[in-house]
Image (cartoon, rainbow, N blue to C red; front, side, top):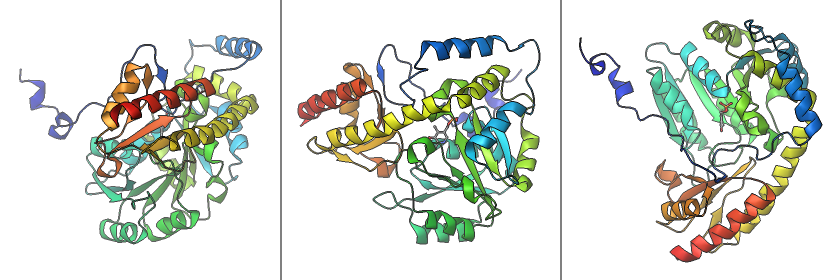
Length: 361
Ligand SMILES: *Cc1c(COP(=O)(O)O)cnc(C)c1O
Protein backbone atom coordinates (compact mmCIF):
# COMPACT_ATOMS: atom_id res chain seq x y z
CA UNK A 1 0.00 0.00 0.00
CA UNK A 2 1.26 3.49 -0.75
CA UNK A 3 0.41 6.56 1.33
CA UNK A 4 -2.57 8.84 0.65
CA UNK A 5 -0.13 11.54 -0.45
CA UNK A 6 0.73 9.40 -3.50
CA UNK A 7 -2.89 9.53 -4.60
CA UNK A 8 -4.51 12.76 -3.46
CA UNK A 9 -4.20 15.50 -6.11
CA UNK A 10 -1.14 17.66 -5.31
CA UNK A 11 -3.20 20.87 -5.72
CA UNK A 12 -5.61 19.55 -3.05
CA UNK A 13 -2.73 18.66 -0.72
CA UNK A 14 -1.47 22.23 -1.11
CA UNK A 15 -4.80 23.68 0.13
CA UNK A 16 -5.57 24.73 3.68
CA UNK A 17 -9.00 23.55 4.91
CA UNK A 18 -11.69 26.25 5.12
CA UNK A 19 -11.39 27.52 8.66
CA UNK A 20 -14.55 28.04 10.68
CA UNK A 21 -13.50 29.10 14.18
CA UNK A 22 -14.83 26.98 17.03
CA UNK A 23 -15.82 29.25 19.84
CA UNK A 24 -17.81 28.91 23.02
CA UNK A 25 -20.31 31.47 24.26
CA UNK A 26 -19.56 34.67 22.40
CA UNK A 27 -21.40 37.59 20.90
CA UNK A 28 -21.19 36.17 17.40
CA UNK A 29 -20.78 38.90 14.79
CA UNK A 30 -18.52 37.14 12.28
CA UNK A 31 -20.71 35.24 9.80
CA UNK A 32 -23.54 37.53 8.59
CA UNK A 33 -26.17 35.55 10.45
CA UNK A 34 -29.49 37.14 11.35
CA UNK A 35 -29.29 37.53 15.18
CA UNK A 36 -33.00 36.82 15.60
CA UNK A 37 -34.73 33.47 15.57
CA UNK A 38 -38.47 32.88 15.13
CA UNK A 39 -39.91 35.62 17.31
CA UNK A 40 -43.17 34.15 18.56
CA UNK A 41 -43.96 30.98 20.50
CA UNK A 42 -47.05 30.27 18.39
CA UNK A 43 -45.07 30.40 15.16
CA UNK A 44 -42.38 28.14 16.58
CA UNK A 45 -44.99 25.57 17.62
CA UNK A 46 -46.62 25.68 14.19
CA UNK A 47 -43.24 25.33 12.48
CA UNK A 48 -42.31 22.38 14.71
CA UNK A 49 -45.62 20.68 13.93
CA UNK A 50 -45.07 21.13 10.19
CA UNK A 51 -41.58 19.69 10.36
CA UNK A 52 -42.70 16.86 12.65
CA UNK A 53 -45.29 15.89 10.03
CA UNK A 54 -42.65 15.19 7.38
CA UNK A 55 -42.30 11.52 6.48
CA UNK A 56 -38.54 11.16 6.84
CA UNK A 57 -38.72 7.47 5.98
CA UNK A 58 -39.27 8.56 2.36
CA UNK A 59 -36.81 10.32 0.09
CA UNK A 60 -37.59 14.00 -0.29
CA UNK A 61 -39.51 15.35 -3.30
CA UNK A 62 -36.62 15.51 -5.80
CA UNK A 63 -38.17 18.55 -7.53
CA UNK A 64 -39.20 20.27 -4.25
CA UNK A 65 -42.43 21.19 -6.02
CA UNK A 66 -44.10 23.10 -3.18
CA UNK A 67 -41.00 25.06 -2.25
CA UNK A 68 -40.17 25.91 -5.87
CA UNK A 69 -43.70 27.25 -6.38
CA UNK A 70 -43.51 29.48 -3.32
CA UNK A 71 -40.01 30.74 -4.23
CA UNK A 72 -41.22 31.60 -7.72
CA UNK A 73 -44.08 33.58 -6.30
CA UNK A 74 -41.97 35.16 -3.59
CA UNK A 75 -39.27 36.39 -6.00
CA UNK A 76 -41.60 37.35 -8.85
CA UNK A 77 -39.53 35.16 -11.15
CA UNK A 78 -40.49 35.69 -14.82
CA UNK A 79 -42.55 32.71 -16.16
CA UNK A 80 -39.97 31.64 -18.72
CA UNK A 81 -37.05 31.52 -16.26
CA UNK A 82 -35.90 28.36 -14.51
CA UNK A 83 -35.12 27.80 -10.82
CA UNK A 84 -32.57 25.41 -9.34
CA UNK A 85 -32.28 24.70 -5.60
CA UNK A 86 -29.08 23.99 -3.71
CA UNK A 87 -27.88 22.93 -0.31
CA UNK A 88 -26.99 26.55 0.38
CA UNK A 89 -25.79 28.77 -2.45
CA UNK A 90 -22.30 27.36 -1.89
CA UNK A 91 -23.48 24.11 -3.48
CA UNK A 92 -24.76 26.02 -6.50
CA UNK A 93 -21.40 27.78 -6.87
CA UNK A 94 -19.89 24.31 -6.96
CA UNK A 95 -22.41 22.99 -9.52
CA UNK A 96 -21.95 25.98 -11.83
CA UNK A 97 -18.17 25.65 -11.68
CA UNK A 98 -18.28 21.88 -12.26
CA UNK A 99 -20.57 22.30 -15.26
CA UNK A 100 -18.17 24.80 -16.82
CA UNK A 101 -14.95 22.95 -15.93
CA UNK A 102 -13.75 22.20 -19.41
CA UNK A 103 -9.95 21.77 -19.67
CA UNK A 104 -8.43 25.24 -19.80
CA UNK A 105 -11.63 27.05 -18.78
CA UNK A 106 -11.18 30.06 -16.49
CA UNK A 107 -13.16 31.61 -13.65
CA UNK A 108 -13.07 35.39 -13.15
CA UNK A 109 -14.17 37.70 -10.35
CA UNK A 110 -13.25 41.12 -9.06
CA UNK A 111 -11.28 40.86 -5.79
CA UNK A 112 -11.50 41.06 -2.85
CA UNK A 113 -14.75 39.12 -2.95
CA UNK A 114 -16.41 35.98 -1.58
CA UNK A 115 -13.60 33.44 -1.20
CA UNK A 116 -15.61 30.39 -2.28
CA UNK A 117 -15.49 31.46 -5.95
CA UNK A 118 -11.72 31.05 -5.96
CA UNK A 119 -11.67 27.99 -3.69
CA UNK A 120 -14.21 26.04 -5.74
CA UNK A 121 -12.45 26.96 -8.99
CA UNK A 122 -9.31 25.45 -7.46
CA UNK A 123 -11.20 22.33 -6.32
CA UNK A 124 -12.34 21.85 -9.92
CA UNK A 125 -8.85 22.36 -11.30
CA UNK A 126 -9.70 25.68 -13.01
CA UNK A 127 -7.59 28.79 -13.22
CA UNK A 128 -9.03 31.69 -11.23
CA UNK A 129 -8.46 35.24 -12.49
CA UNK A 130 -8.92 37.92 -9.80
CA UNK A 131 -9.29 41.49 -11.07
CA UNK A 132 -8.45 44.03 -8.33
CA UNK A 133 -11.20 46.46 -7.33
CA UNK A 134 -10.39 50.17 -7.20
CA UNK A 135 -9.18 51.74 -3.92
CA UNK A 136 -12.76 52.48 -2.87
CA UNK A 137 -13.88 48.96 -3.90
CA UNK A 138 -15.51 49.94 -7.17
CA UNK A 139 -15.26 47.79 -10.28
CA UNK A 140 -12.20 48.79 -12.30
CA UNK A 141 -14.07 48.70 -15.60
CA UNK A 142 -11.10 49.09 -17.98
CA UNK A 143 -9.27 46.31 -16.09
CA UNK A 144 -12.39 44.12 -16.03
CA UNK A 145 -12.96 44.53 -19.76
CA UNK A 146 -9.30 43.86 -20.55
CA UNK A 147 -9.27 40.73 -18.36
CA UNK A 148 -12.49 39.42 -19.89
CA UNK A 149 -11.04 39.97 -23.35
CA UNK A 150 -7.69 38.35 -22.47
CA UNK A 151 -9.05 35.32 -20.56
CA UNK A 152 -12.50 34.73 -22.10
CA UNK A 153 -13.76 33.31 -18.76
CA UNK A 154 -16.39 30.56 -18.71
CA UNK A 155 -17.95 32.21 -15.65
CA UNK A 156 -17.75 35.61 -13.95
CA UNK A 157 -18.91 35.97 -10.34
CA UNK A 158 -20.31 39.31 -9.18
CA UNK A 159 -21.37 39.39 -5.53
CA UNK A 160 -23.94 42.19 -5.46
CA UNK A 161 -23.58 43.67 -2.82
CA UNK A 162 -20.03 42.42 -2.55
CA UNK A 163 -18.75 40.46 0.43
CA UNK A 164 -16.61 41.62 2.28
CA UNK A 165 -16.74 45.22 1.04
CA UNK A 166 -20.52 45.74 1.44
CA UNK A 167 -21.08 47.92 -1.64
CA UNK A 168 -23.22 47.19 -4.71
CA UNK A 169 -21.71 48.33 -8.02
CA UNK A 170 -23.78 50.45 -10.42
CA UNK A 171 -26.24 48.36 -12.43
CA UNK A 172 -24.88 49.80 -15.68
CA UNK A 173 -21.45 48.31 -14.87
CA UNK A 174 -22.96 44.88 -14.24
CA UNK A 175 -24.75 45.19 -17.59
CA UNK A 176 -21.49 46.17 -19.27
CA UNK A 177 -19.67 43.13 -17.82
CA UNK A 178 -22.45 40.87 -19.11
CA UNK A 179 -22.36 42.51 -22.54
CA UNK A 180 -18.58 42.15 -22.88
CA UNK A 181 -18.49 38.56 -21.57
CA UNK A 182 -19.11 35.56 -23.81
CA UNK A 183 -19.53 33.16 -20.90
CA UNK A 184 -21.90 33.03 -17.94
CA UNK A 185 -22.27 35.95 -15.49
CA UNK A 186 -23.63 35.06 -12.05
CA UNK A 187 -25.00 37.93 -9.98
CA UNK A 188 -24.78 36.62 -6.40
CA UNK A 189 -27.48 38.41 -4.41
CA UNK A 190 -26.80 36.81 -1.01
CA UNK A 191 -27.47 40.19 0.66
CA UNK A 192 -30.60 41.12 -1.30
CA UNK A 193 -32.78 41.35 1.87
CA UNK A 194 -30.59 44.27 2.96
CA UNK A 195 -29.86 45.81 -0.44
CA UNK A 196 -33.51 45.58 -1.52
CA UNK A 197 -32.52 45.58 -5.15
CA UNK A 198 -32.24 42.70 -7.60
CA UNK A 199 -31.54 41.58 -11.15
CA UNK A 200 -34.29 38.93 -11.01
CA UNK A 201 -36.75 41.20 -12.83
CA UNK A 202 -34.26 41.54 -15.71
CA UNK A 203 -33.64 37.82 -16.20
CA UNK A 204 -34.09 36.99 -19.85
CA UNK A 205 -32.94 40.41 -21.09
CA UNK A 206 -29.46 38.94 -21.51
CA UNK A 207 -29.08 35.26 -22.19
CA UNK A 208 -25.82 34.91 -20.21
CA UNK A 209 -27.01 36.31 -16.85
CA UNK A 210 -28.26 34.23 -13.91
CA UNK A 211 -29.02 35.27 -10.31
CA UNK A 212 -27.93 33.40 -7.18
CA UNK A 213 -29.80 33.84 -3.89
CA UNK A 214 -29.81 32.27 -0.45
CA UNK A 215 -32.08 32.22 2.60
CA UNK A 216 -29.00 32.13 4.86
CA UNK A 217 -28.47 35.83 5.48
CA UNK A 218 -32.22 36.39 5.83
CA UNK A 219 -32.36 34.27 8.97
CA UNK A 220 -32.33 30.63 7.87
CA UNK A 221 -28.61 29.82 7.64
CA UNK A 222 -29.15 26.53 9.47
CA UNK A 223 -31.62 25.24 6.87
CA UNK A 224 -29.09 25.43 4.01
CA UNK A 225 -31.13 26.61 1.08
CA UNK A 226 -29.90 28.55 -1.91
CA UNK A 227 -31.35 28.98 -5.39
CA UNK A 228 -30.20 29.87 -8.85
CA UNK A 229 -32.58 31.61 -11.27
CA UNK A 230 -32.13 32.13 -14.98
CA UNK A 231 -32.51 30.83 -18.51
CA UNK A 232 -33.32 27.11 -18.95
CA UNK A 233 -30.52 26.79 -21.51
CA UNK A 234 -28.03 27.18 -18.62
CA UNK A 235 -29.96 25.80 -15.65
CA UNK A 236 -31.16 22.67 -17.46
CA UNK A 237 -27.54 21.65 -18.02
CA UNK A 238 -26.32 22.58 -14.54
CA UNK A 239 -29.24 20.62 -13.06
CA UNK A 240 -27.80 17.41 -14.51
CA UNK A 241 -24.93 17.60 -12.01
CA UNK A 242 -27.18 18.00 -8.98
CA UNK A 243 -27.38 15.00 -6.68
CA UNK A 244 -31.02 13.83 -6.70
CA UNK A 245 -31.96 14.70 -3.11
CA UNK A 246 -29.71 17.65 -2.42
CA UNK A 247 -32.38 19.61 -0.53
CA UNK A 248 -33.60 17.45 2.34
CA UNK A 249 -37.26 17.05 3.31
CA UNK A 250 -36.96 19.01 6.58
CA UNK A 251 -35.40 21.94 4.75
CA UNK A 252 -38.10 21.83 2.08
CA UNK A 253 -40.87 21.88 4.68
CA UNK A 254 -39.15 24.41 6.95
CA UNK A 255 -38.35 26.84 4.15
CA UNK A 256 -41.86 26.61 2.64
CA UNK A 257 -43.26 27.42 6.09
CA UNK A 258 -40.84 30.34 6.49
CA UNK A 259 -41.94 31.80 3.16
CA UNK A 260 -45.58 31.65 4.29
CA UNK A 261 -44.52 33.82 7.21
CA UNK A 262 -42.16 35.97 5.21
CA UNK A 263 -43.47 39.18 6.80
CA UNK A 264 -41.69 38.22 10.06
CA UNK A 265 -38.33 37.75 8.36
CA UNK A 266 -38.92 40.93 6.42
CA UNK A 267 -39.51 42.88 9.63
CA UNK A 268 -36.27 41.52 11.04
CA UNK A 269 -34.41 42.60 7.89
CA UNK A 270 -35.88 46.10 8.26
CA UNK A 271 -34.69 46.20 11.87
CA UNK A 272 -31.21 45.03 10.82
CA UNK A 273 -30.99 47.73 8.13
CA UNK A 274 -31.89 50.37 10.71
CA UNK A 275 -29.34 48.97 13.15
CA UNK A 276 -26.69 48.83 10.41
CA UNK A 277 -26.94 52.56 9.90
CA UNK A 278 -26.82 53.28 13.64
CA UNK A 279 -23.83 50.96 14.13
CA UNK A 280 -21.98 52.48 11.16
CA UNK A 281 -22.41 55.93 12.68
CA UNK A 282 -21.17 54.75 16.10
CA UNK A 283 -18.10 53.06 14.62
CA UNK A 284 -17.29 56.00 12.34
CA UNK A 285 -17.02 58.18 15.45
CA UNK A 286 -14.07 56.13 16.76
CA UNK A 287 -10.66 57.76 16.25
CA UNK A 288 -8.70 56.43 13.27
CA UNK A 289 -11.54 54.14 12.12
CA UNK A 290 -12.85 54.35 8.55
CA UNK A 291 -16.29 52.85 7.89
CA UNK A 292 -17.13 51.80 4.32
CA UNK A 293 -20.70 52.24 3.09
CA UNK A 294 -22.72 49.00 3.26
CA UNK A 295 -25.85 47.79 1.51
CA UNK A 296 -25.57 44.46 3.34
CA UNK A 297 -25.94 43.22 6.97
CA UNK A 298 -22.28 43.73 7.78
CA UNK A 299 -19.85 46.64 7.90
CA UNK A 300 -16.25 46.78 6.69
CA UNK A 301 -13.89 48.88 8.80
CA UNK A 302 -10.33 50.03 8.31
CA UNK A 303 -8.50 50.56 11.58
CA UNK A 304 -5.16 52.26 12.36
CA UNK A 305 -2.23 50.59 10.55
CA UNK A 306 -0.99 47.44 12.21
CA UNK A 307 -3.79 47.26 14.82
CA UNK A 308 -6.38 44.97 13.18
CA UNK A 309 -5.18 41.68 14.63
CA UNK A 310 -4.78 43.15 18.13
CA UNK A 311 -8.24 44.71 18.00
CA UNK A 312 -9.71 41.41 16.84
CA UNK A 313 -7.98 39.53 19.70
CA UNK A 314 -8.95 42.23 22.21
CA UNK A 315 -12.61 41.95 21.22
CA UNK A 316 -12.44 38.16 21.42
CA UNK A 317 -11.00 38.44 24.93
CA UNK A 318 -14.09 40.52 25.76
CA UNK A 319 -16.31 37.78 24.32
CA UNK A 320 -17.05 39.34 20.92
CA UNK A 321 -16.23 37.46 17.72
CA UNK A 322 -15.86 39.43 14.49
CA UNK A 323 -13.86 38.73 11.31
CA UNK A 324 -10.28 39.91 10.89
CA UNK A 325 -9.57 40.41 7.18
CA UNK A 326 -6.06 41.78 7.55
CA UNK A 327 -3.85 39.47 5.49
CA UNK A 328 -6.75 37.99 3.48
CA UNK A 329 -6.03 40.24 0.47
CA UNK A 330 -3.66 43.20 -0.01
CA UNK A 331 -6.63 45.58 -0.40
CA UNK A 332 -7.95 44.46 2.99
CA UNK A 333 -4.87 45.40 5.03
CA UNK A 334 -5.97 46.71 8.47
CA UNK A 335 -9.59 45.72 7.78
CA UNK A 336 -12.18 44.15 10.08
CA UNK A 337 -15.69 43.02 9.19
CA UNK A 338 -18.54 43.12 11.68
CA UNK A 339 -21.96 41.58 11.21
CA UNK A 340 -24.89 43.69 12.38
CA UNK A 341 -26.41 42.08 15.49
CA UNK A 342 -29.20 43.00 17.89
CA UNK A 343 -29.22 46.54 19.33
CA UNK A 344 -27.71 45.14 22.56
CA UNK A 345 -24.94 43.27 20.71
CA UNK A 346 -24.15 46.30 18.56
CA UNK A 347 -23.90 48.53 21.62
CA UNK A 348 -21.55 45.99 23.27
CA UNK A 349 -19.42 45.91 20.13
CA UNK A 350 -19.22 49.70 19.78
CA UNK A 351 -18.27 50.10 23.47
CA UNK A 352 -15.70 47.31 23.38
CA UNK A 353 -14.12 48.55 20.16
CA UNK A 354 -13.89 52.03 21.64
CA UNK A 355 -11.97 50.61 24.62
CA UNK A 356 -9.74 48.47 22.39
CA UNK A 357 -8.97 51.31 19.99
CA UNK A 358 -7.82 53.55 22.84
CA UNK A 359 -5.78 50.64 24.27
CA UNK A 360 -3.81 50.16 21.04
CA UNK A 361 -3.46 53.91 20.29
C1 LIG B 1 -22.69 33.95 2.59
C2 LIG B 1 -22.55 34.01 1.13
C3 LIG B 1 -22.90 32.93 0.30
C4 LIG B 1 -23.18 31.55 0.84
O1 LIG B 1 -24.40 31.36 1.33
P1 LIG B 1 -25.01 29.92 1.68
O2 LIG B 1 -26.31 29.95 0.97
O3 LIG B 1 -25.14 29.92 3.16
O4 LIG B 1 -24.11 28.84 1.17
C5 LIG B 1 -22.84 33.09 -1.07
N1 LIG B 1 -22.41 34.24 -1.61
C6 LIG B 1 -22.02 35.29 -0.85
C7 LIG B 1 -21.53 36.53 -1.51
C8 LIG B 1 -22.06 35.20 0.54
O5 LIG B 1 -21.63 36.21 1.28
